Structures are given as C-alpha cells and as structure tokens.
Length: 338
Ligand SMILES: COc1cc(O)cc(Nc2ccc(C(=O)Nc3ccccc3)c(OCCC[NH3+])c2)c1
Image (tube, rainbow, N blue to C red; front, side, top):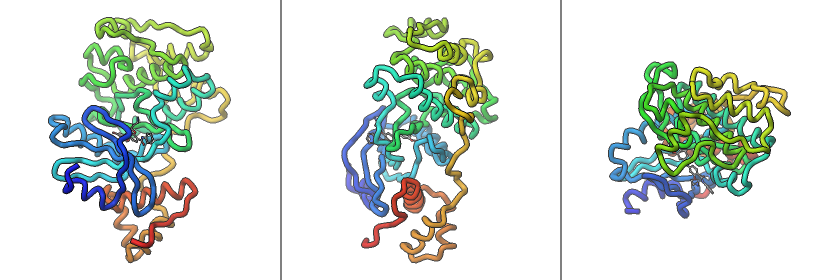
C-alpha cells in the first residue's frame, strides 16, 4: 500500500495479514498500538468505489449510530488521499455461514441461542429507523465469546420518513430476498428483513437454502411461490415459525415485535429477547476517561469533553477499545512507554 496512505494507519495500528476480500474491500487483521487490542481493518480504494462511494458514506454514518452487543462496532474512520479505512470490532470466530457448513445444521437449541441474538440486533437496528436489507449468514460473525455480531451495513436504508416509508431499490442476495423485493414492488424494509431472517432461520436449522436454483428466473419463481421443503428433523414449532416468517404476503408476515416473545423463541427461556443496547452511546465510562486523561496529560473534564465529540478518530478508538478491554475483564490500561 502506498506509504502516504498507510502512514496515517500505521501511526495507530500494527497491520497483519488479510482475512477477507469482498466486492470493493479487503479486511486485514490489526492491533491498536495504544491499547494492544486486536481489530479488523476494512480497506477500500476510493478509485474502485466509483458510484458506490455514497453507499460507503451511508454505511459509515449508519455505523456511527450503532452501539449494540450484537452489532459489530466501528471504532475509527481514516480517510486518506486514495483510501478509506474502517477500523472494526475483531470477530475471530469467523462467519456464521462457515460455522453452519462445518456442523451440517444446528440443533434447535443451539439455533435458538443464535437466533435470539440475531433478532436482538435486528430489532435494535429497526428501532434506530434502519432496515439492514442484506441479512444472511455471511453477514453474521462470531466473536471471541461465541456471540454473534451483525456486519455490513452497506445496503441498509433509512427511509426519509422512517420505516413506515416504502423502499424501492432492489438489493441484497437473491436467495434471502423477499418476494415483494425481487418483484420490484414498493416494499417496507422491516418486512423484507423479517423474510430474510426466516431464510436465515431455515439455513441454521436445515443447513441448506429454502429457495435455491442456479437459474435466476427459476429461483425467483420459487421465492414468489413461497413453497419449500421441511426436513424430517424439524419440530412442529420450528415448522410453524418458519411458515409465519416466510409468508409471501408481507402483511401476513410476523412482525419483529411478535418475534421477541414468540413461543418458539421462549422455549427454555423465561424472558423475551432483550433488544435494548447494553452500551448506550451517551454513557461515558469513568475508568476509561481517567486512564486516557492521565495518558494525554489532560484534565478529566476536558478528556470527557473530547471523547463526547465522537469524531471516530484516534480518541474515539482509544476510548472504545479501552471500554472493550474493561468489558472483557482485562486491565483498563494504555501502553505507558510511547
Ligand atoms: C459494522 O461492522 C462491519 C461492517 C462492515 O462493512 C464490514 C465488517 N467486516 C468485518 C469485521 C470483522 C471481521 C473479523 O474480525 N474477521 C475475523 C477476524 C479474525 C479471524 C477470522 C475473522 C471481518 O472478517 C471478514 C472475513 C470473515 N470471513 C469482517 C464489519
């Protein structure tokens, strides 16, 4: 990578090998020097983004508003002459997609643990007025506590008038796309996300896609028909929930609110899905502020003020990574000798 671009990144991070290459981005492993915390660094060449640049800007603004235990966290945005770097939460368990493949399919119990986390993340995103629109196992990563983190808000939308407004752009992966979306009809993002979650639930329980075909048109026909095979190992409760989520008519489809305490979701649990965030954006942790104040030789007050500006610069990254350290039970300490 050209020195000038990398120099800004290398001021704050050690950069290791590439762990993923996507459409117009690649993801490398990294380590934040000051806290020692591992991170994922999404690297995008501006020249390759072309007309997708506005979409990336949208994703960045969306992520700045997201702080939730099941949403991958954005720590730092570095824009240089030719690149945009996103420093993101480290999720060493890899993709849920690979996890399902490795186990053929998951038990109903294990699926329920994961699916409650997915519903928690999606309910939070919807409550913020966004629809994700690209829900699939590839966009759910497993962190080092074996919890799921929702990633990739590149296709998410925030309709001007809130989720009550209809969307038009057709996007996401066809196999997970709702019938109304692939028919080019005006659709509600929240309803389309519920369909995709139904497809996701099916892949977790069955280890395959409910609607699949190499031929695009054949796939579209299957989705609009809405008929799929239920493997013999599915419980009748699972079959019912899948049916309620993969309703071709979006008005007959389950709402996210009904998922939170759905009987299938409650089996073995005593409380509905907790979708509120455990790390509200406004809350500033005292221990982290004090450690930063000492390190920056600033007053606690001025450090608190600086962090509260949430510029997603080195200050934001240092604060959030110190907080991550504290939440993982590691000492709230910055490297002294620098
Ligand atoms: C909001 O979070 C986002 C947004 C986005 O646009 C992209 C990503 N992508 C990420 C984030 C983290 C990882 C990661 O930590 N992976 C990893 C780390 C250690 C071992 C194995 C995987 C990431 O990985 C991409 C490759 C996974 N196949 C992508 C997050």
